[in-house]
Length: 326
Image (cartoon, rainbow, N blue to C red; front, side, top):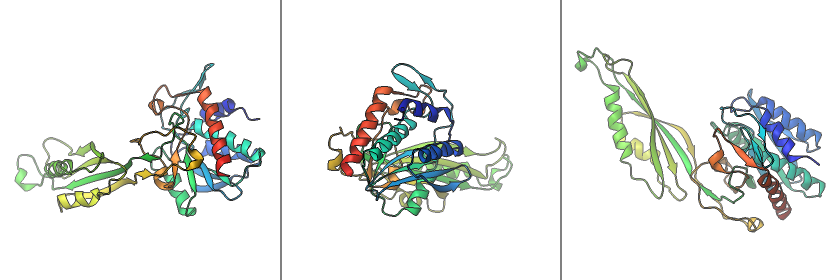
């Protein structure tokens, strides 16, 4: 029987920041192949690939991402906890899902799969590739740190970049130029006055512009992040364009839908959690829930960890879900 703690140690020991996942992809692929799960490589790019496993005709996928945020955090183990980068986000879910899948296969449970992706922590390049090649995905359990509570509703993200162009000139003769920063400030003011629906929020996160105080700036940029609440159907791209006319150029950097999925009877033995404000790959998979071991407050932090008890419990929950769906 696979030791779930040893597996998680191996996963954490292999650094896998987004855009540099090839080593962990090969490790996980070889591990699954050696265990008889017949994994399939789904090419994404030179930096990594997705991994797909089918047991029968899947009615359900267990999904986890292989990448982490870039800041390293070495593996450590205590009698009660496992510490390290990815411990809860989301290599803990990955280890529990893999062990659950192996035990399910030994018990003769069929019609499920594993869906392991790259690039979740940056631009979701793995999830984007999956939905290109697999149409009409069945129900998906997305592994993220939820304290083993079911999350069936979360916010989406809309990233907008405002680009202002002007004309450079010497600051002693400003009438010969066109100040891109002045134009951008006007556009920023208009965006911040956009009426938000439901519980959605907007944040001005970054501004760039100008080269020196004695030069009229000919270029300036601002980046906004909208967090779109479930049920908010307002078109914030169109609203932003309408308010700014030809004042600035507007580009979309991210546009991930908020999600809501009714919790099916197969999951009614698990405590449900309120809507969360973060966003996951479920925005691409659409039909499913988020469920995994660990606490989101430790994800991406310099003390990322997971308890061993919760890791074992996660494996049991995933196994029961597979049995219920099968």
